[in-house]
Image 1 (cartoon, rainbow, N blue to C red):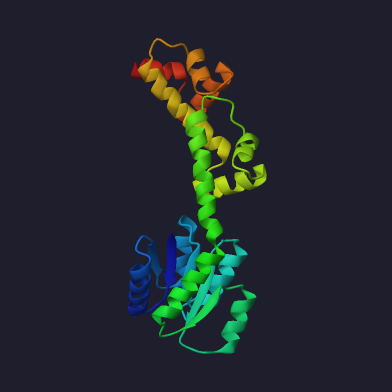
Image 2: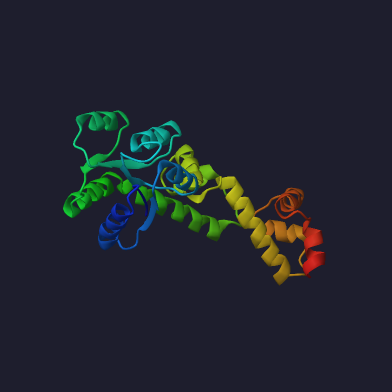
Length: 233
């Protein structure tokens, strides 16, 4: 799992990273010393959980929480501060933060917060397992007619939910993924079976129409299947 820690004090970043890694050795820990750096990280990585110091240079930790909520970024936040000030807690409640820790952070309190988060979000791992099942089906049945609604039935979720979670976890829409997967398989088949016709290739990777296959191949690869064969065979 990816975890984000934001604090303008390098020693605090180092200490929190050490305490988390001590317990969760396989986690990927990303650190930032201000909100600007943190915003760049959340644009390129998914963080289920973040520890955020309230007192940051420039935008505060509360400002960063506001940024997450305004941009609909699905990251749970634990606020960290050196001050026991109820006004901070009040603002944190408004921003729907997960919890609130006071410096110096005590190890068992930190671990308890993380464990509470993991119990609350066991569905996160379930989502990954779900998508892996779908990817396995695609790899095994790409040569057949595959529709999102059929796959959703096989993994016992609604098509709308599956579509949203597939895009969220894989990073592309389901139709785009399977089209690219089939085209890569088509290229492999053309190299392995140079005597096969384009109709045979199209049929073996799940296209009912050679015309559709050729158009999609050119859109993805920039050349037609025939040009690919001439170039590589």
